[in-house]
Image 1 (spheres, helix red, strand yellow):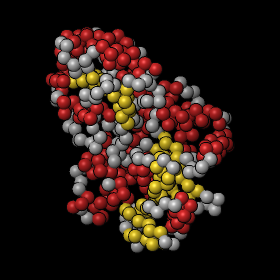
Image 2 (cartoon, helix red, strand yellow):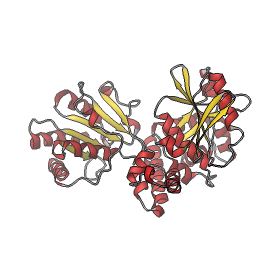
Image 3 (cartoon, helix red, strand yellow):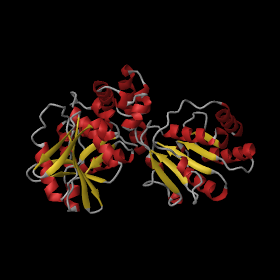
Image 4 (cartoon, helix red, strand yellow):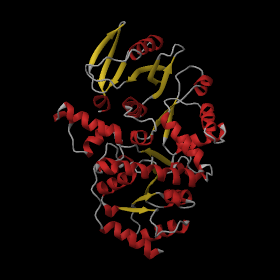
Length: 417
């Protein structure tokens, strides 16, 4: 085993890194923290966690880092492989501290005990990554609580998408910008998908989804009702709103027996795997908030466009997905609806105050804004005493004055930039 590990480490040092396109996110700020902690890099499959580790190695020098991918089929999934790795690093580097970049380490039993020992008794700095929620802050083993920091990685933002496409919107024509926005809207922000030929993009998304279903759900949680699981996911993707009770009834009407508690458990699996993020109703009552219908948002718009049975260029749904991810990276976000069915897509809160109201609407320059959008914003503005009102559009840009309120209509690409 030691010879194999030594060979893997030497190959890492001797072989060049792949081409790295820098992202807005960097791990460099986590080097030499005043308190020794493991840095846990988490996120959905194939969002670019490994390349963040590569980027860190390129900035620090590969000779100062050791990278191991524990999905390497040559490595046994035993704790001993971690024990022997430290011995190999000492043989090769002496007492010098190195940066240990451990990819998909959750595949190794008792990895957290080993990580704690690295922090307590070695000079090495530890970065670990994985697609599983097992290394997220909510599911870390006891021995790592308080000894780690979580860094969440998402699919590429629009700014990063433009960088990957080597595209500068400032110097381009309006139709050219919309062409690229349409690609981002339809195929999403997974790096490999963005760089692939158009004909391969759907195939890659299909492969990502199948791997997620099999490894992150069925295998990890030992699920037997695979058909019910798939149907629940499909219904979620097709639903602008959902309640578990209605979902259970819908599935039963299609001939499958499934209970509300089972669907609740499945939903937690989807959330912990980073696939689904439910949005709750904005209301003062916690009871009403959790009993009301939720709005499902997904890790990447490419999955919505690829997997939705109702998708017939439902651009408004996709646009709303992108607006959600822009807003969800900041303050607390909810949706709002009153008894008259006035609705605002996103209510942004900062502590006790509503700071921003946002509608997402696929409307173009010269078109008429759908009748329901503006009255809902005005109604919510009066109710929450909020005067920052935004209508995110496809390409309409103007300032609207309505009932004493100012609404900024802004194109999607400018809102996301």
